[in-house]
Length: 193
Image (cartoon, rainbow, N blue to C red; front, top):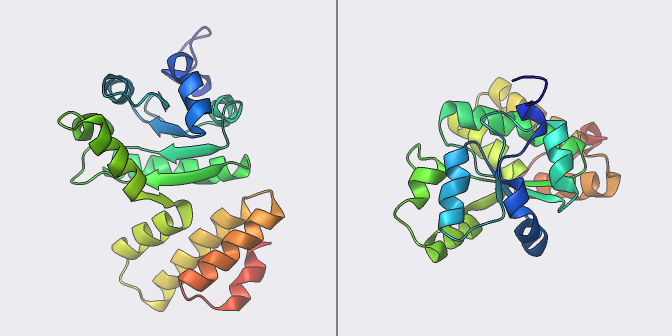
């Protein structure tokens, strides 16, 4: 980093991806440069890289000029999942929509796409894109033994994320969706406001 280059204010590949992001009304965000290059080689051009860091507000604002929809395609290793979790709340605070795709077997977007054609990649992304609530519930459920204390942690994490959304109608809608789909007690709805 220097005075000239600050990676938290730049998205690698944005210049070449702008028109496709607008056309698809969605921006895929990956961690690394090679992920962007591989996806472009495979014909998927609405993709940018956050340069190996969790998304910053400046980077989100660059995307917001083109679309309100972000799909996180970070690596499925521990560091990538942690960066995804950190990015979700920042994205929601900026009144943007966020979904997540997890790659199998600790793969990253580059390795996953290397031996697949465009249709296979697009089908995988479409079929495995989940909203942030489902992502956090799955992630936390997979790592916890589901004791009452651990369940409370899951609920608090999801409620905290929902509460970050500035648009109250969206907050209410997502809260209702979460409460009904995950069989949660209704009194939790008040925690989202």
